[in-house]
Length: 565
Image (cartoon, rainbow, N blue to C red; front, side):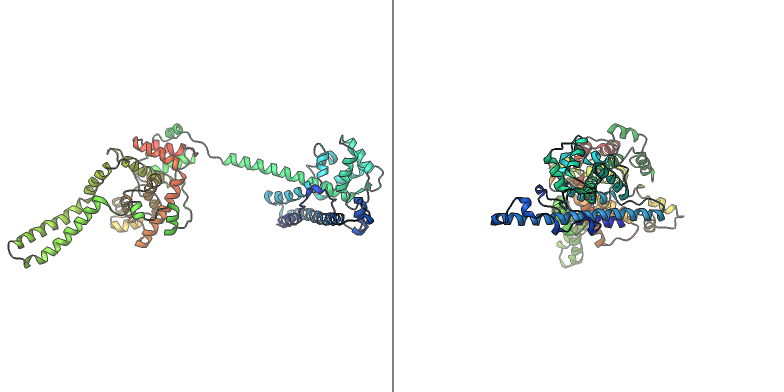
C-alpha cells in the first residue's frame, strides 16, 4: 500500500512538469543530498557568455531569446528535480515494502499495472532528459556502462553498481569525470567519441556547469536510464502474462460433428425430470459443451422508455402482434356479442307479441349455445383461423421459423430442456420448451408425493417455478417475437407467446400480481432483445435448420459450434 501511494505521487509529479520542448536539450538537475555537493544557481556560468552575446550588443530579439531559454531551463530543472524526488520515493517505498515483508513473512509487491504506470512516466522523462545518451549508444547505454543490471533489486545495489562504473571512468580519482575521461570511456566501449558526442552527453549530465560530471550527476543519468529499461522490461512481462492468460482462458473451439457425437444417447426432448439437464451439465463439465445454461441476466433498466429505446418499438400491441387481430379478433367479438345479446333477449322476449316472441326466444337459445360452445373449441378454431391467415402471407413460413429458432436459442442458453419437438404440420414446426430446467411440472406426481394431501394449487406452490425460473420463461417466451422483429421489422402472433408466458407464470411458487406480470413481460423483451442481437448469425442458421426439420441434436450442435464473426 505504501509503495502504491508513492508510485501514484511519482506519476503525478512527473506528469505535472513534463518538458514540452524536448528538442531544446537543456541541462538536467539532480536532487542533491547536501548543499556542499551542489553549487547554488547564482554560481552557474552566465547565460549571455554561453550564448556568445555581449552586453553592448543586446537587442530586443536577443533579450527575448535569453528569457525564453532561461524559463525553459528553469521548468526543465524543476521537472527533473521532481522526477528525482519521485525516484527517491519509489526507493523508499521499496525499502518499506521489504521491512513489512519481515513481519508478514512473505514478499509484498505492488500491482504490475501501478508499477508500470509510474515507471513509464519516469521513462518518458528520461527519454527527453537524456536523449543524447540514448542516441549515442548503439545498444543500451545501461548495459554498455553498468553491465547486466537484472539482479539489482534494491536502491543500494543499484547505487553500488553505478559507483563502480563511475570510479572506472574517473581515471584520476578526482571525484568527477571530465570530457577527456568521458571520451576515453566511450572509445573503450566502441562508442563514437567525437567532440560533438561528448559535448551532447555533458550538456545533459553536467547540471551545475562545472565542466565535470560528479557522482550524483552521473547517478541521476544512470538511474533515469535504468528506470526506462525497467519500464520496457515490465511492459514486455505484462504483455507476456496477458497473452498467456488469454491463451489459458480461450474457449475450446467445438466442432459440429464432435458435439453431435457427444450428444448420442442423451434424451434432449421430453425426458423424465432432471435427465436432460443432468446429462448436459455433465457434458459441459467435460468441456464437450460450452453454451448450455450460460445466459447471464444483467441488472438493466426495464422501464417503458428503456424498452422503446432498445427495441425501437413504440406500439408493441401492433408491432409485436400482442393484441388479438384479424379474424381471431372477430371471433372473440362475435362470441362476446352472442353472450350479451342472448342475455338481453332472455329478459326482453316476453315484451314482444307472438310470433316475434318465439323468434326472440329461439335466438337467445342459439346465441347462448354459441357463447358456450365456441370458447370450448376456441383453440382449435383460432388455430384454423391462424392457418388461414398464415397461408395468405408470403413470408409466413420464414417468420414462423424465426420465432421457433429464437425461442429455442433462449431455451438452450437459459438451461431449460425441450418438452416437445413437432414437425408434423407443414410450415408450422414446434419447438416447445419445458417449464423448468428439470422439465415440465407433473402436478399429479407432486400430489402423490405428499400422500395426496395437497391440491393442485398447493402442489404448484411447493414444486412450481422459482422467481429465477419465471424470469427465464419471460426471456424464452419473448425471444421468438424479438427474433422475428429484428429480422422482419415487426412480429406477429405475439399474443400467443404472451398467453403461454401467462400460463407459465401461473405455475410460479408465489403469487404474481398483474403489475409484476407487466414488469416480467418488459424484462423478457429487454433481455431477449439483447440476446437476439448478440446471436444474429446463429439465428439465421437455426431458422434455416428449423425449416429443414432438423432434430434437437443438430440444433444444439449448431449453437455450440457456431463461431462469431
